[in-house]
Image 1 (cartoon, chains in turn yellow, red):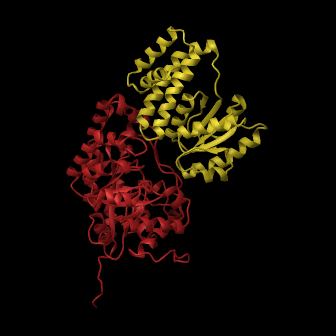
Image 2 (cartoon, chains in turn yellow, orange):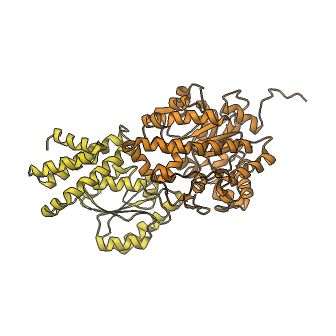
Image 3 (tube, chains in turn cyan, green):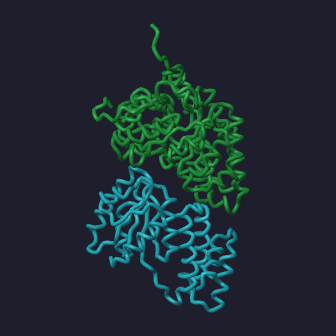
Length: 214
Length: 352
């Protein structure tokens, strides 16, 4: 896709009218453009620009939420096409807010950005107990698990979780952590595989971890 | 006896002087526009969450620990941000000693679902704050600054509608956002006035259109006129609490006519003092995460001295302190202030 075309997708993601994304994608499907190209170059390309703008404080959370809403609509339209072509996912990512914590804005932003970046995301929601994480990991075999916490108290849950995941699996997924009280120092202390300050950096971290060949 | 260099140096006078940017006196005032309660303070007073959110005597006694034990110049009795939410119909989980309360339901998805009860001020979660302030006024009102706290209409909208929904509406349905703010500002005004009447010297208006979530333009378009109206109609002194990095919108808070702005460490104190230019007082801004919670008394001392030397009007933690913040870190704020305006240097064996 040309940069002008990616710009069209970018404008669609920024548009408050859902129909703009809908129309644009249908137009590309009709033009016989591969749904994988529409997703990877158009949608994910556009979401990448939005992520960078967010990181640079050119746009704020409402614009990201809007882009995510439009992106979800786009994926919904593309899904049947993608299933026919078997689009490769960049990796499987499981995420949840740890037990005792019901805050989810940060986690949801990470979910949106990871989906937008082409990962298959399983979002376990809030207040997720250890056993639920272990069960989903054993069934879903994710490449990366993301743990989120907003509170200094619930953040401490992460330590036990990192340990439990490593103990339960011979080939454990990478575990990354984030949330307002979490720091790189804390992540190192509990021996997580990585820490990201925000949703855009979480995608960069995931890309980095997986490109190292696990 | 005639004292040399007699200064207005009781907690209340120090605080009020700082609030209005007046005489500097012998040292900066230390206050807490948001909660400074910690698990250790609960242990020392024998009063714990969640009871302290719901019982006026317990609320007042636990809040007074900030003055009695830590040596702050102020007492601010409202620990949570959910008192209004419960009164307006949210189901609130009042938490535990290590967890702040949280709204579990967000019952209003449209303006017609916004129900402000006629007896709002009689609701238990509102009454508890008013009763606690009355108790504090009787016991401390002569010499300690009493700070009240209300949520602004933006924060109440988060609780009633859900944060993500509300933020998305700013783009796809701005009229709905304005409708929520216009309706809910009446809650803020009524509760603020009642707190001033109950004995608060000033009310903090916490309205979380934070620097990390929304743009300065969003604040300007939606909230600035509402905040101007709040300040006009409340009448008494107000402090704005609005977290995140708001370096790019400090002048807007001046335009909203708050007496003071309670700000975060992310906003550089020197820059803020310059930009605000004494047209509004600055209260802050010791970092919670890395310093009050994760740092040492020496780290606290360094940040406190930086803020004092930058010319901040009142020294304070940047936000409600983490419940596990060590007590010696909280005391270190007061110790740093006691040195006056010229630093003596950190002494590791100070009587914390």
